[in-house]
Figure (cartoon, rainbow, N blue to C red):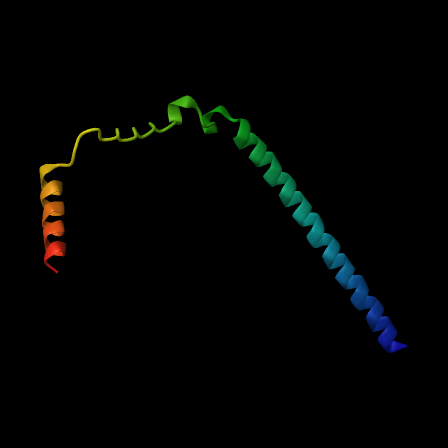
Length: 84
């Protein structure tokens, strides 16, 4: 009989603790949702056109031939391969 009373008290206490913890979590989520709604619609926190960083300009494709230094490197590379 004693262990049954102990089991009832353990179940009761754990249920109350679980309920209180869940209610605190629900209130915290509600506060977080209110704060998120405020920051989503507040003008000073909006991501507007004035806050957009400038887009990087892509490099233009080269239309000319190789540079003189590049051409010398490749000529040297080809001449070394021919000797082997």
